[in-house]
Image (cartoon, rainbow over all chains, first blue to last red; front, side):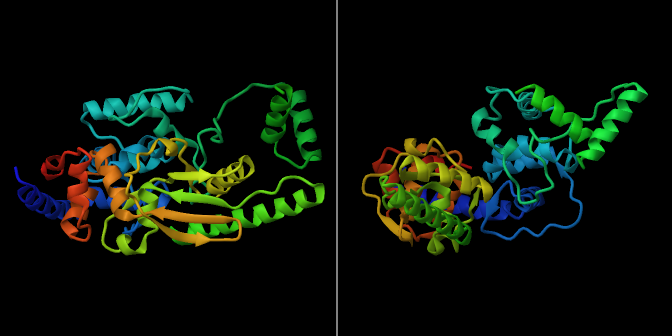
Length: 181
Length: 166
């Protein structure tokens, strides 16, 4: 094919891309990821209220329009999981996403790639500082645990924490971290 | 993005000035003026001429060639993280077309920041990461603002037909 013919085809394809970028699956996913600070863009993506993104839609938008969505998607699902909805279809892409997420949750140094994107390129965004400071990184996320302690132990813990002007949990965590130095 | 980068590099410049004051007093070697060349998506996003008509998105990573001493490199990485950005450690591996040009972005007393010209950044993307940049390259060619783009892609052995496929 001659260069001029290829360029004419490219122009037609670019028109199709323009239409695709109006698709709500792309716009909603981008709005969410840009607003949360996972992505930056030179377009405006207005977002309303408490949005929930279907993971299938985000994958579609990443595969068909903006591949950078796929680069940050596993980290976004881990850090903001309440905003994502899992579809009923367990496609190979979904299974791949779950595998990568499992490796990230276990803080593995080396893990499984996601749809051709290297694990080390994905991992960066798990502990990346986001615009919204309330969103914790994977290493700062707290995990709830129940421990049964004697009343006397609890009394000592409360008094020590009060004297240090910190919470019981913080006091306990500091003790454990110090003992691990 | 340009505003954010200006803030980062201005702060870095002040940090170098402070460090040099300490070094003057202690008789140490001064930190020389550094040159930073921004590549990749960030070079396009900070380029006012192209970001007005290309649809651009990027993660927080910064591809840049840095001629710095260790002090500056460490401080820059810290500043990028504080501002929601990350220095891409693979930056040195980025392929740059040999005829690339550069435009000045900022010039502070201790740091000179420049960006690769937009067409060369696009050629690099088309050759080394065509799948990731398929729509971007299509949009750039269709815009007719980069007269040499298609020819340069072909010149470097790129598959122009790939960008015509849906």
